[in-house]
Structures are given as structure tokens and as C-alpha cells.
Amino acid sequence: NAGVTQTPKFRVLKTGQSMTLLCAQDMNHEYMYWYRQDPGMGLRLIHYSVGEGTTAKGEVPDGYNVSRLKKQNFLLGLESAAPSQTSVYFCASSYYAYNEQFFGPGTRLTVL
Amino acid sequence: QKEVEQDPGPLSVPEGAIVSLNCTYSNSAFQYFMWYRQYSRKGPELLMYTYSSGNKEDGRFTAQVDKSSKYISLFIRDSQPSDSATYLCAMSGNTGNQFYFGTGTSLTVIP
Image (tube, rainbow over all chains, first blue to last red; front, top):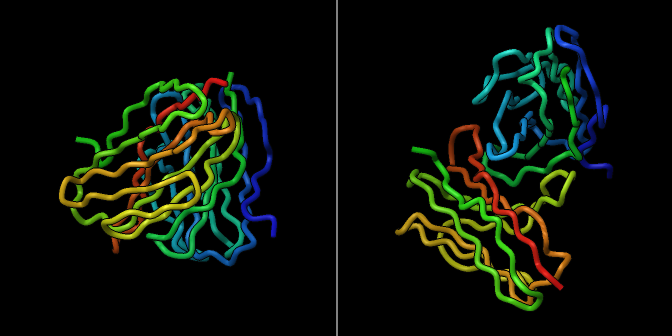
């Protein structure tokens, strides 16, 4: 089992560019999450999904969109990147809302 | 008021010391309590998972939950340099779709 994988691992964007981060899990989990982690801020939830075809907003959703067309994949999109979106992005998944979450290795994004 | 409060540290201890990491929380509905370990430039990995109040031990690690005080702790015995990492507490309730994470405590174990 690969667990939770994320692509790409690193990316540098210019302000205004767009990109999509891909998260994949092979554990048949229903719940998937996107977080950003910034120094001193901890993990902040961007969007989450409770099953295929569903998405919901988290704590910091502005500037991001998500899609969950397949149960195993959860995509995070930045339509017009801003320097404030420079961060490390983590994807996670879990069986239920209250179960432990399994994290991917992260994507380091820099927006210039 | 934040849902979960965690002292960010940093905490520096000599090898072999007992380490105590703590979190407090405000929501009495929390039932599930976790500790994650995050090495530099890696994703968080689950270290301990407990349900409701009580203690749980796994090797050198002990997790304690005191729901009456809304306080959870992680103890590391005989700390090793390989324990140097950031430790995040996390918790959730029976309903709802959100986990709440602490901001993490940075630990360095000096050989």
C-alpha cells in the first residue's frame, strides 16, 4: 500500500498562475482533507470531502477550489495564485470523521 | 478562544530525559484524542490514538487524557535524538467533520 501520495512535491509559481495539486489514497477512505501548514499557524483546513462527489469548505477556503470525482483522488486547485498562498500543503484521509487521519508527504509551493 | 491550545516550545532536553508535552481544549464534546509526530520536511504521522479519558502506553510513549480538566499529555521516556521532531495534538468529537489540531511543540533531544 502506498498510503497517501501527493504530486507534485515542489512547485514555484508566479503570481496569477494556476495549478492543481493531486492527492491519491489507496486505503478506500471516505474522508479526504486538504490542509496548509505555515510557521506558527499549525495545520489549517482548506477543504474536505466526506465521499465521492462531495466537497465542503474548511477554515481557510478562499482562493482554492477542490474536486472529488473519484473516491481515491482529491484535487486542490489554485485559479490565480497569490504570494499569500506560499505554504506547505498536506493531504490527508480517514475512514470516518473521528478516525485518525493519514497524511501525505506534502507539497511545497512558492508563489513569487 | 482556540479549540485547542498547545505550547509551541521549543523544548530542548538531554538524551534519556522524560519529556512531557501537553494540550488543553475547550470543547467538552471531544472524544477522540491523538498525537502526531512530524519530522522536518515530512508529513505528520500518527503516534498515539486514545478514546475518552485514561492512559495508553506504547513502548516509551504514554498518552494521558483528563476530560474533566480538558487536558491531554504525551510522555516520552528515555528520550532519544531520533525523537527530535514537532509533536501535534489532535482531537475530534463523535459528530461533525472536523479535526482540531494544536499548533505543535518542537522538541530537540540533545545527545
